[in-house]
Length: 170
Image (tube, rainbow, N blue to C red; front, side, top):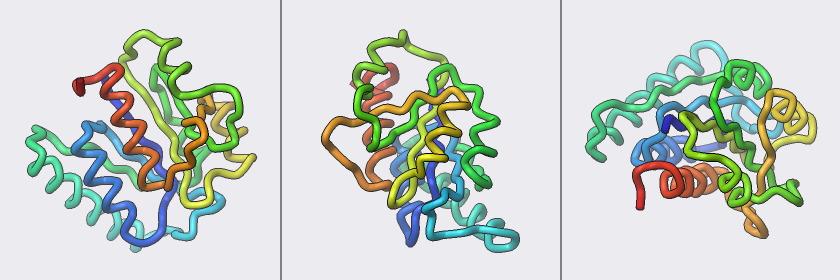
């Protein structure tokens, strides 16, 4: 199973942690995006420098965790632009505003897919417009229940669950 994490740009060093741990958990690709509520804005030369740093982080994490190859890292634009390229079999959007569909139910509704996309917002979550854009692109909003996780925790939790459900953990 190939997992792509679409991660809203967090502030500070949180992206470094996300990249390290997602690499250990077997993510195939991490695509960052600037969300409406993202504090960090990467453009031009700053974006190139950040990509270079991200690639070094995933390469080192892959080496340390015994992976043969590092995940691909893409510094993307806005959410709608990066999701326009999403071609995964299962598309999940972690959203604290979802009241009816829980992650567990969504996973039980699918057989083991070839590929999965997971969208995680930055600090403060995704705006209502961003949720609408993702739904229009075929993403299913899902809830983790009563738990509201930090941006640096949410993707890691879901990757662990996906690997347990359909992958190589367990």
